[in-house]
Length: 453
Ligand SMILES: C[S@@+](CC[C@H](N)C(=O)[O-])C[C@H]1O[C@@H](n2cnc3c(N)ncnc32)[C@H](O)[C@@H]1O
Image (cartoon, rainbow, N blue to C red; front, side, top):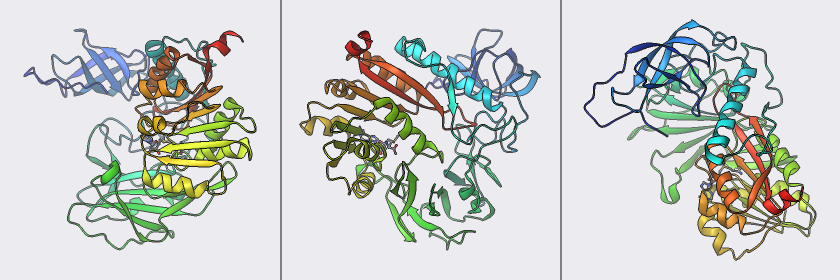
């Protein structure tokens, strides 16, 4: 992530205002503009084509670029709407980027960001990437301008010094207290986290499982503070998280009362996900992604597949179901907690194995030299060149790459091309409405198969 800070003694420009024409959207959700002196501004709370007064929030006279918020809109885009959320706007909640943008235009902007990342980092046109240029809404999210889909089943609230729950301001540790987060799923809102005080608590993560009534609150106490008695508006399991990461890089999480996990439903199965373990936050995401990955891979009975970065085993389970009794799946996952969940979730498939450790270390150790299908769903930073090279060397018929960052996706697609794999299809999915984020699923095949098409 580039930074506007410089270490020089040049004068700070924070607070300075510039009247500017706003240019295209960029990775990160801001739009690009220039001051009359030619300095680049990354402006939030605006849209391409607008004329605004932008107030600098970060940067100095000699910075490569300045960060700014649009504080006055002089000429509004036709894609602008009044932000439905009263906590959104310059200097306020940093959770959403595009409350002020019509839903269809949000998806268009995401498409522009993805096209630019593919071009700049992978040298691919949308056509070469097998992408039709659209960003698809998740089921139930096609709302009218000014409406907000309640999609987020996991919300990490921060608590201010007065014990009020809220969300962090953009690029800040400061808390914007909120009385309701509009993108939170109904099950999260029903817990009433925002209507209580949280003395001694640093953060409260609220989880509302999809397809079960399981609800969980994971509290991180401030250093030296005791956990208060937690009574919420609905029955809820309570976990205590430690602020410091433990061995293995995970935040230790301890059960206080109720279950230590929630049960999620996806692909006609129930998935145990322990407190602190990864699960997609959009209520429809697990199902939508399984569908996109399985359609792209077209698994055949008896094939051998890998699920890398497998979390609680979502894609490994979906593959095992479709590969039948003669098929086999190996999952690899770094988090011990997630591996326990995956082994529990996949216990009824005798030909599924889950190994714990990083993909870079475990994959070479497994002794596996070939596979028919591979799914990779790495964290935001992507898989990186070495993992891509090792995956490509397995000679899979198809590879599904699930990505939450279009820049990491584009970098890894470039590595895959060097290693002999090219995209066959790419789908972009809006699994994070009102924010700049998106999820992509790329289906890759050997370059030889692509040229024979
Ligand atoms: C985006 S999640 C995907 C999880 C799963 N595929 C799902 O959809 O629920 C990424 C997962 O990668 C794991 N992880 C992060 N770095 C890893 C690494 N270097 N090797 C293996 N797993 C890793 C995380 O613990 C997390 O479970």
